[in-house]
Image 1 (tube, one colour):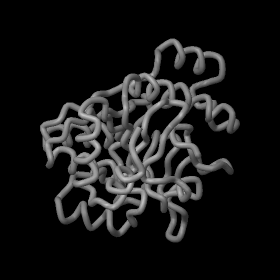
Image 2 (tube, one colour):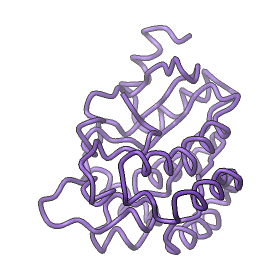
Image 3 (cartoon, helix red, strand yellow):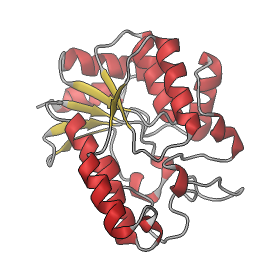
Image 4 (cartoon, one colour):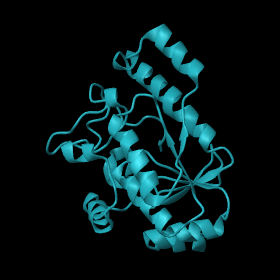
Length: 230
């Protein structure tokens, strides 16, 4: 377990310094889950620039925008990475679709959460097996649920540290970083898609709307899929 001083050193460090410290404290078992959103692209850039020993992976739900796949190829080419792709179990998807329908997630919150569990949570759990530190691109500004999250916290359920290096970053700070480093990002962001998930479950937001308003817009919920909960 990390000491309070080690945690404080990480929380007070710059992005590059914090990522480097984590990999020094945990030479093996540091993984980063990227959805290829703007926040995640910032972290990928920092990991690649510092040549850090971090396994980078992404989840392919089978319902993503084509722009996602184009960005995945572009990112691997730019940073010479090999982002590992995890898919849902075929039997799970077939059972859900055959019993409830291909777009059953529109019918109820329970159906939507079940779909997210099959396509995202279960593959994530497989990807995190054996990990000691899970790096995410969460920012506190993204939703009410994320405002109370810490930069570094112990995930007792998964028995690992969850590291959110951008948790205190503002949207403008993130955009400035992307521009300064010419970091590749999804062109849908320029069309109002601030938070991008599966294509059937994501829309562009209107001026003044919350960043997560475009996710599962037809329901009233915490706008979370189950990957990140307090």
